Image (cartoon, rainbow over all chains, first blue to last red; front, side):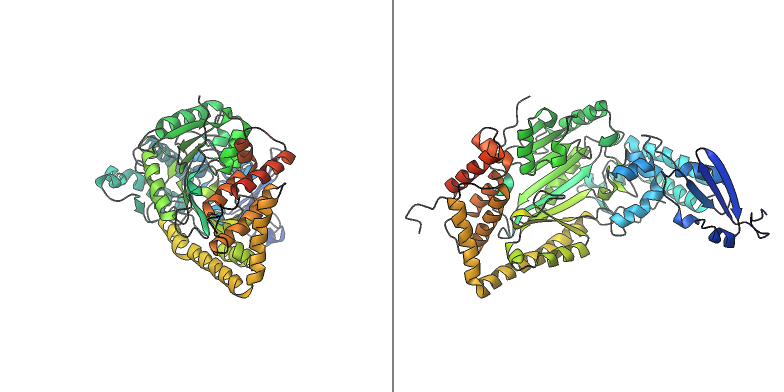
Length: 191
Length: 356
């Protein structure tokens, strides 16, 4: 077990600071971390700062540091750019920034973070579905690599759900049911 | 490309809806984006043209609405754009800029309009006179289905319809009711309405949307929540809860003014009519405020020779864009004041002797 930089206790908080491309690591015990003012993962600081503090209790530090200054793989928009003008760049941004967006969405939508209401009839048939599956599978792999099993499980469930969605269900309004087609929020349980 | 010639009357002026003593218009808007194309702010011109082509093909069909007309805004003069803004057919933001953008309008009733390449690829809107949200929703839902038979929308199971701004994501719907609240204004009760609306996560704005002041005692109440609340729940909240309450509240305020402060009210109303019928210079805001007072007088039966429809038309024609279009040329502010006053005098001229 790694020891705290300040004492002989076990280090449970690991901090990586990337400043001008230079990487500085700190390993601290709970008490010294508090004393040093190191944030815990709950207060994950916003992207787009010169100094990025990333704290995790276990491995995967480098990857995590990378993801905090992440940009959308499709359109290249960074989270900092989004912060500036409040507009996302493309559909994929929602996937790319999902973690950070959820708290923002809850604030903007009276606590809402799941769609309830109309569903496009062709949602399952177009290529967007394939696109999403590709993205989800990539995410799943990343989560497994990062040992974020809880999140991985929910992604796996979401993939299973999309794959098992029968085409008929997505076309139900064609059978003469009154439009719009509605569904409850239990579908699409994602991260 | 033919120039779009807006008809003299636009649908929301007709004044034949329900609760039109208080409710001016009901609007429903849906924000939609095309799957596989970046949102507008990240689009290169080729993407924007792609959206335009797709939208034009999908929207100019009889099944969407009869008389759908395609108006490429980037080719339109500033004045023509302003006219469309004043009619609530496009937003102020959409009027600006020279990149490929358009609006498709159902002509001549103008009840349906679809902004193309505004903040989102498509912003579909239905506007109706009076309180008619259910009706407007039914119509827009059918239009949405029809468009979706041609266009794949960007959609995500958790987040719903994806929009450029996360504040619109989910249903992408905005219900918006324009209310005329002169009674509450005179009784100093507007702040209460504002607070009640805010407590229900609703926004209260002026006649021309975001950031605009409530001129002419016109207030727009609209939802802000689009994620986690279905279209039907929202409609129910509007049509069965908040709006009927505000309407009733306004009517009570009017009645109470009539009973307890009748002379004050009459002075207010007749003075406004007097100014409108005699002024030689009128600013736009002043005209709106005076028209509002006369509208109140008509609603309470104090004024009998002025139809509300005429007042609604005056609200529109007092706007700088419409005024210049009516007169037929561009004018500076000073001249607009003269022409506005003269137009208002003409339209409000007392009825011929047989009337009273």
